[in-house]
Image 1 (cartoon, rainbow, N blue to C red):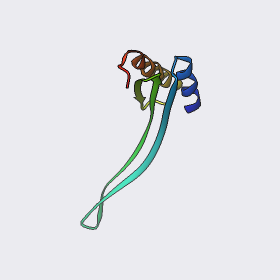
Image 2: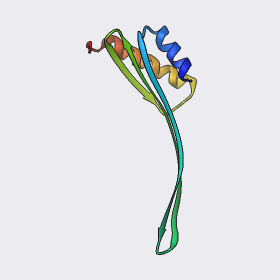
Image 3: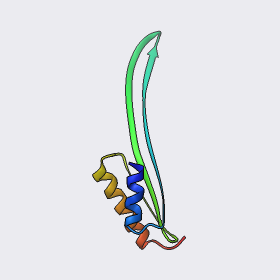
Image 4: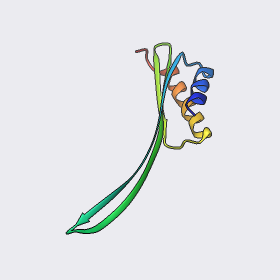
Length: 87
């Protein structure tokens, strides 16, 4: 996923890009007065896309890791980099 996003960023004119992807899962158990009160499970995921077009930066992220959603986020980041002020 990350390699594809980098290739897309380059094809949209990015001179450099940084992409990070994260996934996590966990349980939480709450105990009250020696008895299990609640049990919960969570699963999180996301991708952060930061692109530069020369000295202009655009950032986008999504928690949807489908190709379509990642492609849309890359386009948004690249479009933002086209219109922002230089760093």
